Image (cartoon, rainbow, N blue to C red; front, top):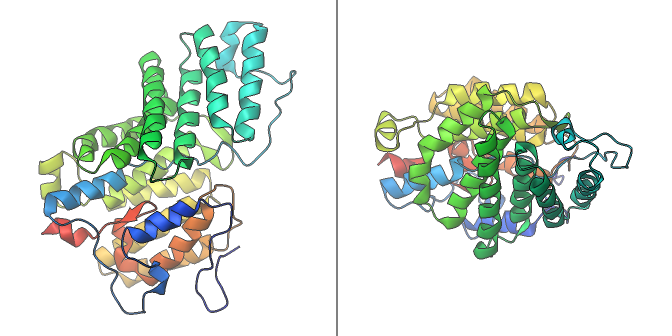
Length: 355
């Protein structure tokens, strides 16, 4: 279901999409939506005004992980006879843990994420060695923070910091927990974007290490066929290595550099896990356009556009951000020269950082 009118212009996002997504995105580059710019006109430069400031802005976008926007599109059995996850069975036949777990699941399915986290926190008190329940708490706080309006920085930061705290606790209990790594990564990225661009400079090497560490752990958690921890880690890794410039001096300045081929490998692996995820397909299109523009390869650009057009035909609303991604797919098709700096949260003019 593509959000295009017969004239080829994207229509307004449906009501299920947070309006501040598109508003903040459009304001980050110009005073009007990208698709209203005349054809042939270059998009305005990003907000960066000096090389290091530009690089910091790039990293803010790159460190934002891209985990699932909601738990699952499928209803799951939360009845009293449904089995507990193996990670919670260490509590034995504890009726309170079972009750709190299913109450938390029901709250998640109602999108009452803070209530779900509160119930899981009570389970954490009963299970002081459970990394599993702690990353579930982190995930709910992260998801709730994502729903807070972008101009309410205080509240967003509060819940992202709670997510970071609980993800850190989960990692302290199990350093080989890939799910713990994902939510720590996602929280760190959002704290950076909410707090300001300069904080991301010091985070870059840590973010890169955590992405690679999480992937190497091969986490097995999956809500359903569209939503797995490993797929989300590959997706986050692709965005990171695409957006961060691969210029040699970037490694010297911040300790890590981009790698477009690595980004391509990561997003293809993500799609092997969840082939119909719209955000994964848009990322693949962006990587192909980025490589094609960088290497002046028309075949890569054509391939990227084909991928994006296919993404626009997918069924929407597995995630609340699907409609936004569809809109951005059309922008990328029209402006492949901006693909290397593309992010759902903003747009960076990489030429500013090069100077």
